[in-house]
Length: 181
Image (tube, rainbow, N blue to C red; front, side, top):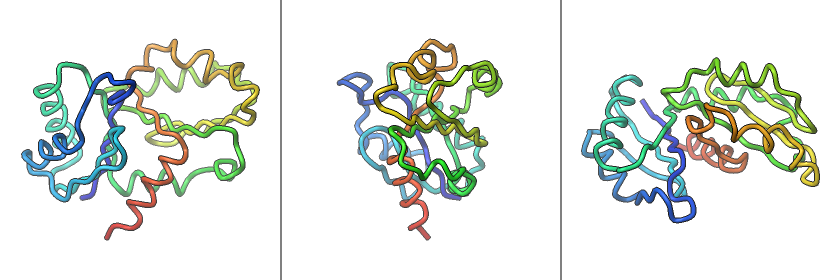
């Protein structure tokens, strides 16, 4: 099975440094194969015969034993990731000012995110709720500071348990997965 591992909050502004080549070697030590990364922000691909739950346990143990800071993460199979892309609404491919994907980490209770979204008053923005992520579009850069995304998302308790990728990174990861055998 092919997996995509998405780490949260690493290598940002010199904080929570994780060297990708070292992390790739650690993943190989726990018997993950064909480990690759895309850019330095914690996007890793690997293959394993282990189930998703076993992979999550291995990654959790590995991160906790090798890093002095918490690293929330999302883990999806190749099929799950590509299914998210396939099920996107048409607006995702329109000319938006910003597009972001908020992936649910393995330890997150999604109901807290869904409750927030149900109660939110959106301003010049649009969302799509997928199985593993929320896809969030912003229509106007000049109005960004008025959006729920900007004004309220960071204040939510669940915020530290999601990992965000911009739309271009999401699309590039999908291209990489689609190009693999």
